[in-house]
Image (cartoon, rainbow, N blue to C red; front, side):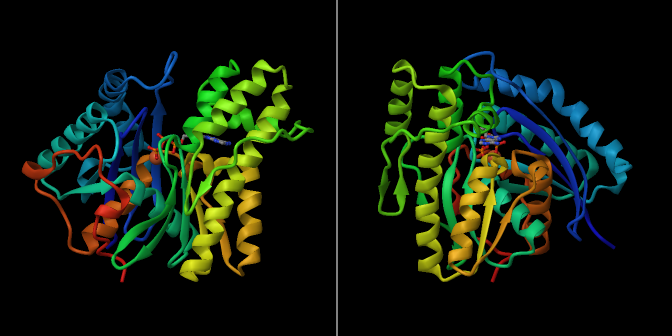
Amino acid sequence: MALVCLGLEGTAHSFGAGIVTSKGKVLANEWDMLKPSQGGIHPREASRHHSDLGPGIICRAMETAGMGYKDINLIAFSRGPGLGPCLRTTATMARTLALKLDIPLIDVNHCVAHIEIGSLESRFEDPVTVYVSGGNTQVIAFAGGRFRTFGETLDIAIGNMLDVLGRYLGMEFPAGPLIEKEARAGRDFHSLPYSVKGMDISYSGMLTAAKKLVSDGVPIPDICYSVQETAFGMLAEIAERALAHTKKDELLLTGGVARNDRLTEILTGVSERHGARFHRVSPSLAGDQGAMIAWNGILQYESGHEIEVESSYVLPKWRTDEQDILWRH
Ligand code: ATP
Ligand code: FE2
């Protein structure tokens, strides 16, 4: 009989509840995102959003899956990395459910969950992963029992860079999709700081220069086009080097920014040059959601891991390479 896991995601502004079976079937994936009124995310406001809406989102997931609580075998939750208040609210819901239903509790690393939901969907065995979101920009590959970061941003994440630029341009949050749309109409390329340092990249200089283009009166589509080409070009360069270095033959694109078609096109080109297969995680599994947490809960439980409620404190700074990946050999 297949196991059924309920996964709760709540590291930042989104709260999600996903239900996945041990055969990898996603039965439900419900979520809601708090849109910050202005500026960045306020951790307390976001955790309040999770505690207000979380129970309803969990109920919706149960209804979508057509299940009762007695059908759930495992509870998984996003233990980190993320904002402390959001993590604690989500963990409290997960602990309560695990105790009440008397079923195992499993702690999940959010970044690892983004990678593994991509591997589930693509059926890739051992990809180089480009993980791009509002809070993370990393090129990752499995080596020596852990997911190793081969390259990453030295300052701001790519999604954050797009959102900050978008806010400067008067766009709504999240700005990534709006910038993508504007960029399609861009004609003139304006050179911006292209910053690759070894295997790492940096976006803050580019952001400052892009803001200057705005005050210089450069048309918005041209700015968006130039920003995308430069930012994605840097990522492509380090992804290409990671493929060459690791000699792996699969390239996976995951995280919220994976919804971008132009980035997908550029990385498709990279994988073709290396004879690697390419997969972009589908839009419903790209951003923050509970199905990826549930799937990782299954992988960990099947490899013998669960956590006691007493020791399930959250880990706001939990890095991708700090977890032993028991289910991969
Ligand atoms: P993490 O905690 O993993 O860093 P997150 O909280 O940023 O995740 P995600 O849903 O993974 O949440 O990613 C959201 C980001 O994706 C936002 O910065 C948003 O602008 C960006 N994004 C969404 N769609 C697109 C798109 N089409 N093009 C570029 N960026 C996009
Ligand atoms: Fe995420």
